[in-house]
Image (cartoon, rainbow, N blue to C red; front, side):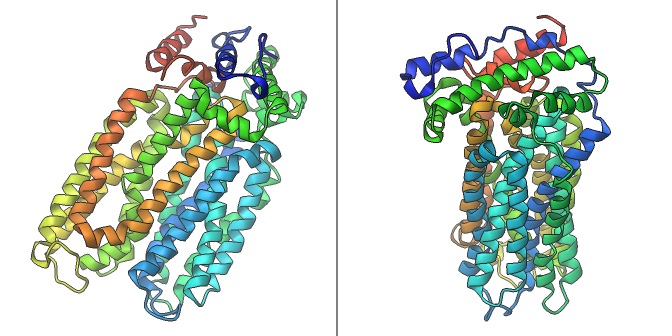
Length: 524
């Protein structure tokens, strides 16, 4: 336990702040514990990341499959769907994900990361089968809600789990693998949607096949280790040494032991906090302790930007939009968007650690704003003769429709390179004692913004026109860029324990750069 520790449960706000500052003074500076293999990935690490990232596949498949489903579902649920019913079916998943994500962190702190991933898969399978069997709008909404609970649990815990097991200098890339697989899931969803687009009741296969990845991950979980930091909370130091020896096989035994010692000191702090506080008090500390509050502000702000920029309107409704614009196979056209998303997320996988989180966001968010403004402009030109509104069945000029598509592709490329994956690095922002709760609130922010967009987009298109809707999303990107510039420090190359030091006094933009320079230069 760190000297000078004051329990949260009995401490005034000033003492709580002192605790947050005190935890950033380890006896051994981790910059001195840079071991061989921190910038390499072993087959063991690839295996556990690949298995955990199936959660990303579930996330991506679910967000992608609904777009094609809404186009071909017809009257299979009793009557042709209204705009309100389409928004209800789409947003039900988001509401479920919001609730699932909100509870995921506290549950994983209590039960472990693996148990929550297991629960997420059970819930997802149940929801997928319920959708496939639906014969009414209410049952379909219920199935989408259940699926959302599973997606919310998985979307919170999978990046957290990967980040806690990843080698320090490869953490950004490995967490991004989850985002890559998510985009691949969207490509798979659109491909299956195009395949079943003309099959009788083909949409049932679209939603039902989502149970398969969940079943695969259920099996894989039996071969995965628990997070080392959770094992330390349980006092199983030897198991942690065995896991780290496989994560860093080139490291000496002494270096592995020293890493475990550093992690153990951080965990000892967390154990004491958990023993002397309630979940409610720890949640309150996220708002009362300056370092925690700054981490929470960044995590929630990035997640809000990721969704409020309107990206998932293209995942949920792109087939409907392209059908109204006159594309013959709207789902296949939507596959182009999903393909661009996947390709540029692969680019992010390559550059996120060497270039860094902050520079990528500062360059890509303005490009998103520009592309959205271009989309708005070309939509205005496209719909000039129909009063600004997309009217299904209208023969729109093909050249103008293609310009809208190209602008959307540019937006998606910029989004996938930065905002689509970097917010999911949220687990690295929080110290262990509030990591689960902090990531839950960030994930809940993501799904809250997602819910707002999903539940209002079609109505917004009618009320403000497509041009107005995409112009509004461009303004969100401008605000998001200002937020990143002012608040988001660089964290690549820093260990999870070191990142906690960054927010001790302010948002730590200069401090993080100094720490990274010192670590690169071998300065202790």
